[in-house]
Image (cartoon, rainbow, N blue to C red; front, side, top):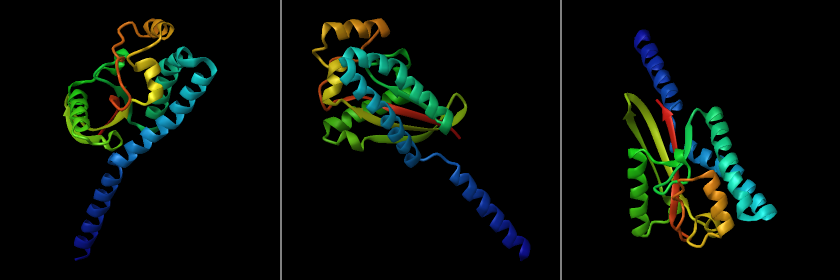
Length: 185
């Protein structure tokens, strides 16, 4: 009897420990919030100090640094992806592409972008992974660099950093891309 109770207690403890170590949507949401709480003020400051041309450097240097720092801190692989990528590393893999297309369908059906997120456990290259994506809306300020009427000086600066840029032609309220987080299980 004592062995049975002890075994059950140990198994329950192991299961709870394993469950506590599992990544979750709540954890990923917190990382999105952390990411944006660092990037948004830097972008707004650069816009005030030098306009959209100045902000391109922030996106080129600060955004990847934030992702790197959060990856080191959290153990998640953190990226931003888009069906119309600006940076080379923003091109979605097959899973991400499917989720981005799902988000576009949901937007067309009237779902608010703020509610668009998706998570799934998958096997990728023989590794079990927890994947999470959260849609990124196009705000009015984003149109300075991502809109249909980007100023020539901004276009020139973008082309210097991103010669294969596709991330233009957006309107306010469209999905510009998504945060994409991965954690090995």
